[in-house]
Amino acid sequence: MVPLHFMSVEHLSLQRRYGAEKGRRIGEILGLVSGWGFFSFWMGLWLSPQPRFTIPYLHAPSIHVPSVDFTVPLAHLLVSLPFLLSGVWLGIGGLREVTLRVAETHRAERVVTTGVYSIVRHPQYLGGLLVHVGASFLLSAWFSLASTPLMVLLNYLVSRKEEEELVREFGEEYEEYRGRVPMFIPQLRRPANTAQ
Image (cartoon, rainbow, N blue to C red; front, side, top):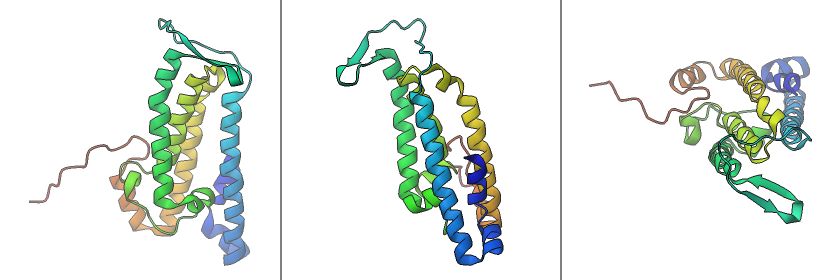
């Protein structure tokens, strides 16, 4: 999905190659396919048959959900909740700022600097990574958890490629935003105003 995603954000190149309208449509289709494909890959990674793990030294009771014949250790539930909740908050916050259409097609109309985009440049990717860790703990999915460094690398590469394209499209406006807001580690405190 990563090569498709890379192609989907090359808006100017696609428009030069295929014309404005056709290039826009091709980019949108590539964005939809790569976005939903990557999400499906993640879901498959969480749910696939794999060795299960338990958090050592925390021998808490388990919760059993009989309707789906699923048991989750209470410690895993407690560890997963902060990751899941913060990841969902970032993902939904990002969607609210840019709309589902922009998120799905990777086609920004403007530089968004409000809401969660004021504390981190890629809230949806960071949210996805946090949900990935939370889901891996919740489901005790060892291979899924072990793949986290690869997921971080893939999200970094995709984010970097998107930013190269955003600089081409929005120039100084995006450069200024990029210089002010971190890529993945949220800026929870606003810098003090140094102007006197």
